[in-house]
Image (cartoon, rainbow, N blue to C red; front, side):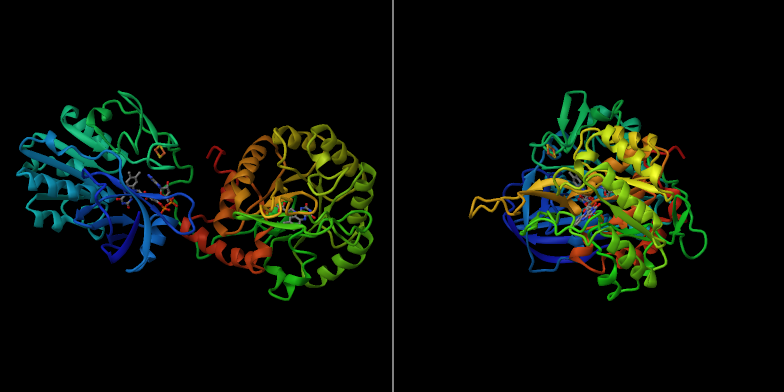
Amino acid sequence: MKFEITSITRLTDTVFEMTLRGDCSAFKMPGQFVEISIPGLYLRRPISVCDIEGNRLTLVFKTVGKGTEAMAEMTPGTEIDLLTGLGKGFDTTRCNETALLAGGGVGVPPLYLLARKLIADGKKVKVALGFNTADEIFYADKFRELGADVEVATVDGSAGVKGFVTDAIRKPEMQGWDFWYACGPLPMLSALGRELDCENGEVSMEERMGCGFGACMGCTIETPWGPKRVCKDGPVFDAILMKDFKGNGTPAPTLPRDRKLEGDEPKVATELCGFQLKNPIVPASGTFGFGQEFSEIYDLNILGGISIKGTTLNPRFGNITPRIAETPDGMINSVGLQNPGAKEVYSHEVPELRKIYSGCVVANVSGFSIEEYVEACRMADACEGVDIIEVNVSCPNVHNGGMAFGTSAQQAAEVTHAVKAAVKKPVFIKLSPNVTDIVSIAKACEEAGADGITLINTLLGMRININTGSPVIANRMGGFSGPAVFPVAVRMVYQVAQAVKIPVMGCGGVSTAEDVVEMMMAGASAVQVGSANLVDPLACKKIADDLPKLLKKLKINNIKDIIGISWRKM
Ligand SMILES: Cc1cc2nc3c(=O)[nH]c(=O)nc-3n(C[C@H](O)[C@H](O)[C@H](O)COP(=O)(O)OP(=O)(O)OC[C@H]3O[C@@H](n4cnc5c(N)ncnc54)[C@H](O)[C@@H]3O)c2cc1C
Ligand SMILES: Cc1cc2nc3c(=O)[nH]c(=O)nc-3n(C[C@H](O)[C@H](O)[C@H](O)COP(=O)(O)O)c2cc1C
Ligand code: FES
């Protein structure tokens, strides 16, 4: 359903009121919500209806992430797509004479339409609102204008009662009601459930949603009436739900809540097998050439490391074209390891790179037999400019080699063993995600002597041209990469980093400083950036610029502290 934004007003630092014009006939009860489609985001975002008058809809939202931030930037006149009339709202008929309404933070907006309806039905309304500070208060006066008695609580005591909504409802002015309604964070609802009579109330629940209309089962919670979908069977439920409510599964934060920034600049340096990297950012092999193209755009020395183009013993032309296809949020390539061969790379390309780059140089090596891997790695080992050898047992674009070694724990271990016996420099094995058990392969490489693991290489993918019926890529299939593969990469880094003692270089879909932090929290000691370089040649520079700012915002003093924080015991 199309709605046109008619106004957008900032109510507090982070809370906005948006009014829209459109068909509001699907809304039947206060407490229902809309699902907003936000350009560029895959899932819609649920927002409660704050008010409806004729064809005018009011939403109030707090900026907490990409979606709500994009909403705050929208301007009057913009048309947006909403799913309307969603969910089961508050039942105003359950209140006989006087209602107590309790709301916290962004739980306040749906109570406004509820208050208006109750007052229009001739009922008395008492409203207790909870905020963190006086600066965050909104809508208290609007409830008063409706004729409701209003009490405000602030956690820091800067306005109204010091404390929580539960403190506000204890005020004498808030006594004498026959039914209560509440909306707010779960701890607030649980506290109200303990404080008030659960038989005479309704609570509005919040849950992460997929569809918002009952199709995906993404929002199901345990209730006394069996499993219920918050979006369809709720979000408003009888307050009996709060009796012994076990809560949802939101994991407890592992970053200390009371963390403080020490000094001006967070530390972004990291380490790989004794090499100090000024930051964890390493352009991924095959997406950065030998660095020369990028050195014309920025000083490569801002990078922690560089993984150069995959090199085979002998020169290779690679696969026939077309070698590239586009995918939603990614790409497929079938370059097929085009490279000038080990002799040229280690006698010319690396020395040329060394003239302009002093960070960690990672030589990425591929082969078609164990002997070829060993020979090419020996040459990389002998090359002065190379710091780390990255053995690619995961290229999906060549026959008789590449991925074949990386999809068998035994063969991956054999390559590792043979290479390790031939070289002195640290060896990382770059693994393929096209396997069912990545952990067993990583462990086999570690046992065979690997000094580190890089993962992931590309996923095997394919596109077909619907006009011709033919595969888009001449080689039919190719390696799928880009932001779309990021969650697969994070999952595999998370699994492998826990299972091995050697460092992991995370790779796959990284395109922002946020992605780097997430990958490191999964367990990566350094993070490779691949396809993003092809879309924006400045991608790595932007990430390097953004990373310290992001750490500052997250109050992380030293990036090394977050490696594996998602599973590590603090
Ligand atoms: C039925 C319902 C009604 C809602 N009504 C309102 C409203 O009236 N006003 C309002 O400001 N917000 C409301 N929300 C919450 C709102 O949907 C989320 O804040 C929003 O989807 C976040 O999107 P984002 O892209 O900005 O943040 P994201 O980048 O998706 O997430 C940012 C942060 O917000 C948290 N978050 C995201 N979605 C939810 C969610 N559904 N529940 C709890 N935490 C979440 C995430 O854990 C994360 O920490 C409602 C949610 C539901 C389920
Ligand atoms: C065009 C292209 C060429 C690639 N060539 C190589 C290569 O020679 N050696 C290698 O190990 N990986 C190669 N890769 C894989 C990347 O290094 C990286 O592992 C993969 O693309 C996932 O990261 P991304 O999603 O950030 O691109 C290549 C990827 C692309 C897109
Ligand atoms: S969000 Fe899909 S069923 Fe509730």
